[in-house]
Amino acid sequence: MHSLDEEASFGIQRLEGYLLVEAERSQALADAETFLDGLILLAVDQREELRRAYLEERDRLTRHTLERIVARAAELRTEYTDRYRRLRLLAWSTAAATTATATGLLALIHQ
Image 1 (cartoon, rainbow, N blue to C red):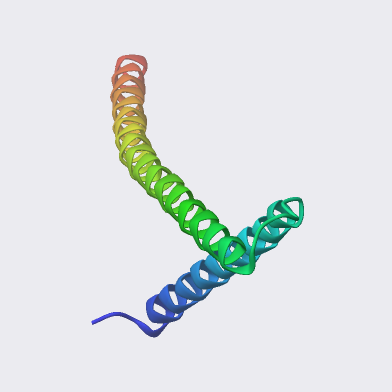
Image 2 (cartoon, rainbow, N blue to C red):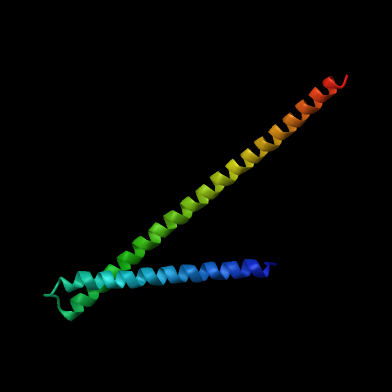
């Protein structure tokens, strides 16, 4: 069972994702309107068709970009988790070797 903190964190992440997507959609619509404003000879139905096509393509590109970012984040998480594990092992090994060396030196000094 998830703790309340984990559930709250997950909910905040979902809300953040939703807000980011909505901001992108809003920007895409504004960009489409800016693009279409320059095409003054279009009929209303042509304008609507171009707006729809523009927004679909922008959505596809955004989705593709986000999928690449998510995949790269997963790769980096794996890479850094492995590095951290190796560094932690190295630190423990160094500490153990230092302790053993110090113990051996103390034993020699006290003989």
